[in-house]
Length: 313
Ligand code: DP6
Image 1: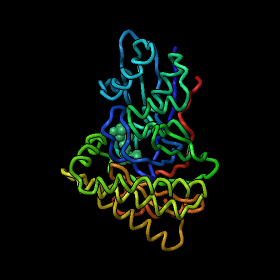
Image 2 (image 1 turned 90 degrees about the horizontal axis):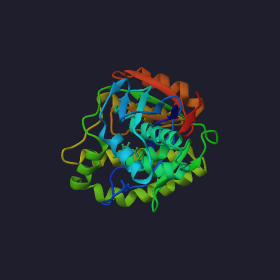
Image 3 (image 1 turned 135 degrees about the vertical axis):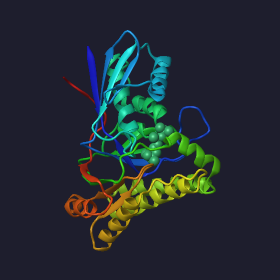
C-alpha cells in the first residue's frame, strides 16, 4: 500500500528570518505567506524493510527528513518507510522546496500510518522540520505567529486570486542553508535586533491589508519586509548577498511598472529569484516585462493554490 500527498511552495510576504533560542524551531518573527498553485512537491510513502529516502530520483541521506521522522516517532508508532518525493521545480533555488516537501511529507505519513493528526497538528510538525513548511499546510493567505506558532489560514485563494510571476535568474543550489544563514544573522548583524522588534507591526498591518484586500498596502509592506530581511542578510558576517544583476533589474522594473499604474510588487527570499505579485489583469504585462530583462532565464506565471492534501490513485 502506498500513500501520496501533494503540497505547494509558499512565498512569504512578511518574512521569517531568525529563530528563538528555544527548542522546537520556533521563529523569532511572525510571517505571512501566499501558497502557490502549479509548482508542487509530490511525496509517496510506503512500508519498507528500512527507512529509504529518494528525492527527485536520487537516494539521499537527508538529515532534516530523518530528524522529522525521529520527531514523529517520538509521539507515534511509525514503521520503517520508503519516502519518494519529487519537485516539479528546482530544489533549493530560493523557491521554498523545503516548505512544500515537509508539508507533503507530514501529510502523507499522517495518512499512511493512521496518525489522525488535525491540520494544526500537522502544521506544528511541519514547522519543527522547516519553519516555512508550517504555512504550506494551508492554501491561500496564511499567517504564522506566536504565541503558539501554528499556521493560521487567513483568506482562501479563491477569496483574493492574485498571480505571481517568478523570474528565475540563476538555477544553482544556494550555498548557505536558511538555518545557517539565520544563525549568522542572529549572531552578527547589527540590524537583527531592530528587525525582530519591528516585524510584529509589519505582520499585523499586513494581516489587515489581506483582510481588507488592500493590494497597495500589502505591496508596500511586503517590499519593506523583503528589503529589511535582505538588509539583515547583507549586514551579517559572512554577508549573504543573494541578488544577481538581474534580481536588481527585476526590482527596478516592478517599481517602474507600478509608477505607470500597474498593480504589482516584488518579494525575494534567500535566493536570486524574484517573485512579482500582481492582480490578474496585470499578469500579462508583468510577465512580458520581466521576461525581456537581460539575465532573466525564464519566468513562470502561477496563481494561488490549496493546502497540502492526499492524492487518490
Ligand atoms: C527567507 O523555513 O527554510 O524563505 O526553519 O530553518 O527550515 P528553517 O528555515 P526556512 O526559512 C525560510 C526563510 C525565507 C522566508 C520565509 O519563507 O518566511
